[in-house]
Length: 336
Image 1 (tube, one colour):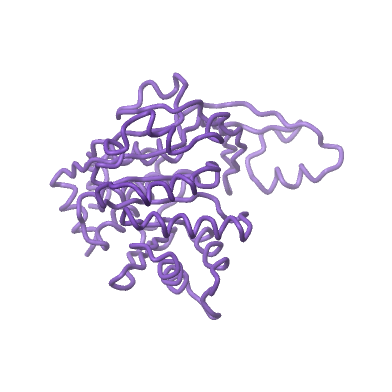
Image 2 (cartoon, rainbow, N blue to C red):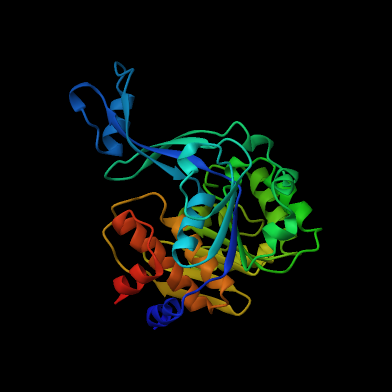
């Protein structure tokens, strides 16, 4: 059983080195209100009220603030599992001062207002003023590239918010760096146009020249990426078909899908799938980042795919069911 093997691996104290980059955000979990409907607890209620012609204003009250961003969340999960982590992000704010892992800032963070509805979260984002100008040279000025990438696993996130990430990937394809697992989570590509999909595919395929690229997406993102392929899988089609087609088109090490019911990986050796523990969600946002952190620790530790997917599943499920990033000991106890 992959989860029993995962518990055994976690008992051994995984300690790979992991780098994450390049975003960062101040996450404000907010209560939304509107007159007599104070508070608005469901996204469907907000949508209905926003359609009413006379409703022009809503109240937004922050309940609490957390350090966030995909790079930060992934780093947090990897650290809690025992990895030695450095996050290279946009972290110029005191909210990031007490993070328990090493950080290197490259500018101001985004501000994310999280409307924590009971049926589905909604994120209202004020983008970082610095990340639009981010390039590989920005990272190079923050730390030497051999230091950033000479680790056991790398995680890069948030393609959709970083306009110059394609250029950075093409530049990295020409670098002499150690071949390591490179987990890439592009973020919410669902609204991307075909030209953006072509640019993403070309950049990720180039990156494989230097790294063992693992593209990691949720179900909706997988559907979007697969539908935009030059030769999408023919109907009737399953997520396994989509992941296989994505990996083959990109010519990368693996295409991974994480989700509520299972995680699966299309690899050179075929498909691997691991069922996900069923939990009651307390958080709708952030589970995918914890999956990425668990996956990176597993791949950086050299664990087989079944155990790696189980590790990502356990980290994500534990987070969405409790709202807390779990330690290795907490996950072992939870699995037992």
